[in-house]
Image (cartoon, rainbow over all chains, first blue to last red):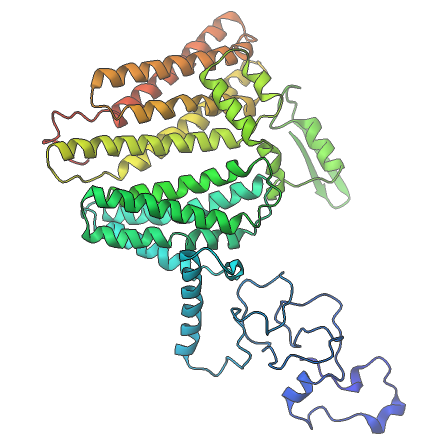
Length: 270
Length: 249
């Protein structure tokens, strides 16, 4: 913890002996959050968890709710800092999260997951929601899909199907992302895996429905529609970041199609 | 292959002599790269060189593999890629699995028995197809290198990979329940891919002496035939007559 007293400023000499104030006389939060003695870091630490709130010192009015240095951002490293008022969907809540009950912590993450799922269902509107990547949502969806598909299978194949679906989802997402990266697209790895995982949501819904509906004439159009929906949603999210892929868009989109096709087919024939 | 080992002040340079036509382990390119401080082998950027193709080029190469007029190397234009071999093989895996399970489910539907699909088919397809495409390409490269034919590994992988394109329509068409039609389709695909492979590998094989080149040719053809027969028997053989006795293995 940097103690922002004048004692550490480079201009301190013994002549200032009577003028330095005891840093421990004030309450510690005031000392940290007050503007005097703000030591400017050499590197741009915006977006990272530091012991200082990372607003630029030239701003005239500090934001009304101080961003909590202990709140854990998910996936904000490297993104530019945005003032608190603009982003209502980030992980910052502005208060000290160390004392809150466990249920509040879990509910906050669950609410984030639900928000992203809603974004997948209606792929218009604010596309920045999925930039805060997290892997809980894809894990929940993948497990739901694997459990559903393996529960409907005969007992001797249940383990193989669970393993297979799990492997296909995660390795498939990783391979599709690596393919896009290696072709020259500028996508962040985990962000892309997160998007691909979240866009499984319509297919997971269909797999729940197929527990009850066995006729192929209902399953087939449902699977086709949700496959198209998932592909459209994920291509929409990822196309914003694939700025370098002018002639190669089809090459990057095709594996995505193939991935959702495999999952849709597994759901269809289960 | 060019290795530099640094022990503090002592520096050992080990150079394995490779043929000047070699690609993957081209000593000259590696020296140049390291001298100019380019990308190391473990970074993802190193592999962008092997994916430097546009959509049009990939489609052109796929089309040429099914209609092999002229040399494939001219189509490659000294820019072999790894995108085609990997994704064409993956597509073939998927279409094979789809057609196999579709045929079996149609059979079950016609006999009004509930259909249970066999997930082992998918894993078996993955194993067979990836090991054939990349494994036999490496085998061919290794054996031609042993006989001094100066092959290029990436070119051979490209030939084997793009030759898989012919299996995509064939596997979709093999849903048809007539066994004789399936055998004819598989034979057509085998002939087409064999012609493509032999035509393009011939220039490499011919650099060995006459007897070895004949042996290599026969080896390639036999390997290809085994592959075609394995595909047919494992995936395209659902007979609608004995569906009632069919049990998932």
